[in-house]
Length: 274
Image (cartoon, rainbow, N blue to C red; front, side, top):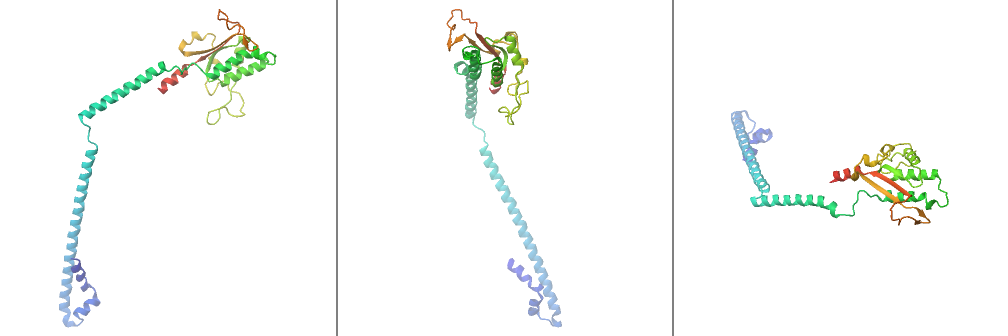
């Protein structure tokens, strides 16, 4: 077909066709007949090409349909549902996993005695120092009331908790409450991880914990339940680094310091994390 189509173009090229049929007037009729034959041949060639193009498009459509059907069959195989036995095993495994997780959540707090939400190392160790700063730690008398107030301020600022009550041995309670109300805090840095360096202490509310003097109460038991409080006690009178009445049978001492914290937020954070 391609060869015939190429040959049919020859009558359209004058300088080739003149060499074939000549240029005399006697040959005009034969030339016209040849031209008509060439046009008919070209028309047939074009029709043949159209038919081949139509067949080609049909073949492409058929190939696409076949390919699509094969992909569909492959997808059906991939997403096939599990058997009845597989469904039962999957359901049982899921149930056992849920029960196991629930048991871990319930039993872990009981068997793990190392986690105690009511204890904080800083609150305990630093408060013990405050308890003794008014006793044997101040044997020379160099720790003045102003210095003691600054120590209390540092404890409150750096203590990660909400203080609701505080008493210190050898410090008047009214004076201590006044100190607590006068505590001021700095702003936090850009990532809120620590105090802003060289900023003034002007805030009455701790931006880290939200504590302010409004948390202070005379009797915490009237406002809070036992589980909502954590208490740090320091009992005993010290002389030359020795407690002189810690072995008393009564278990009491005139040298008694206590600080109580509201730990409701700690329990809430644990529940939310679970």
